[in-house]
Amino acid sequence: MRKSILRNKRILAINDEPDILTVMEDEILDACPDCRFHKTTNYDEAVQGIISSNYDMVILDIMAFRGFRLADLAAKRHVPVALLTSHPLSPEVLRDSFQIKAQGYLPKERLAEIVPFLEEALTCPGSPASS
Picture 1 (cartoon, helix red, strand yellow):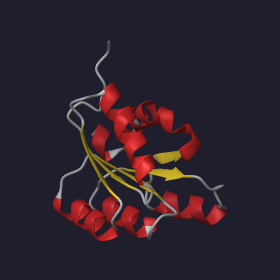
Picture 2 (cartoon, helix red, strand yellow):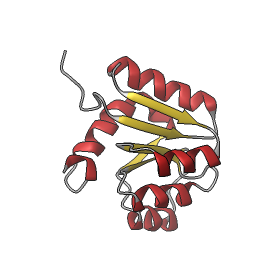
Picture 3 (cartoon, rainbow, N blue to C red):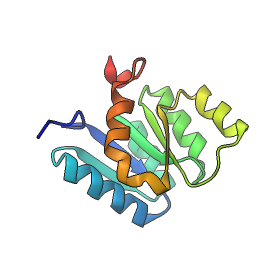
Picture 4 (cartoon, rainbow, N blue to C red):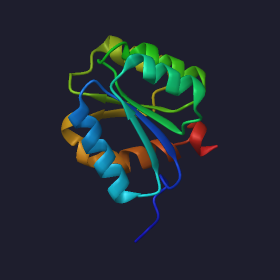
């Protein structure tokens, strides 16, 4: 079994749906038990986590509570941002995600692919985590 790049990574997942967070946590920790996964459904807790902790990745639902504000805050702290969505991507959303240098999108219906998605996001050229 190969070792995941998620080993010892600190990941903050922010979503207004607890079930989505549970699926993410199960998928990630099943593949990499020593990944440090934190989750929240609370906006203020999310802001505090981004500001006070040293995360390797923030995963958030861009359409949930002020998602672009949270993504922008993480990007300004040089934390890679991965976006989840259950909505079609509009030109405006694509433009805004490009401006914050989001590492990519994962549709919620493909949540079972979260581990390879994050591994790719953390190793792609230009990612703060790959430097």
